[in-house]
Picture 1 (cartoon, rainbow, N blue to C red):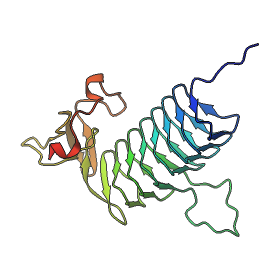
Picture 2 (picture 1 turned 180 degrees about the vertical axis):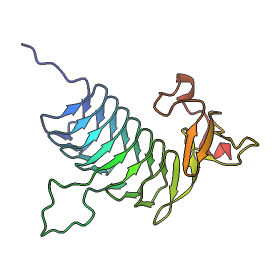
Picture 3 (picture 1 turned 90 degrees about the horizontal axis):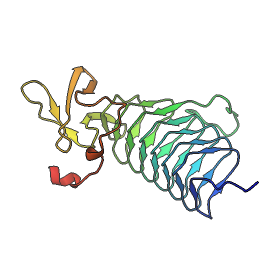
Picture 4 (picture 1 turned 90 degrees about the vertical axis):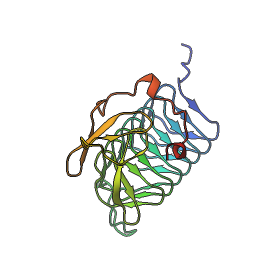
Length: 219
């Protein structure tokens, strides 16, 4: 029987331990290591020098930039973006002399969230859908949907739209409008934001899924 070629790409310098699950269209680049038992969805981009541990779960269309480790206990939903050298862990109180395998804490990063370069997510936390963690921030609390987190320790600075723009200057109806997409958002109660024009779990329409102006062009 002829050997079936995988429908994903693995660079010749990468190490992929079998069995693991890798979805169609995913690309795994230089010097990365995918451990036995890892689950990676479709159309992901796994950058250079990435470590994906056994038991890690990664959804579809996830982009992981260079020098990131995704440990057991970490769950990344669809469309998550991890910036270069950001940090995820799975034990709050590590000691070399104390073995805590089997009691790893879960870190759950929900659909569409972004973690900026060199940011740290303390384990055991949940980042809401389309949350945005600024570069270098240290997140030690749960983050609501669309929450924009900045600083050490990180605090919510405001709200970030699904297209990655700060939402500000509400109109007379208390609506916040994304300058790129035109989607409207409303804070339904303190600390809870929803999009009025598209369900948070719905894919972007094709015409909204390509950026045509730089971030600073909207300022």
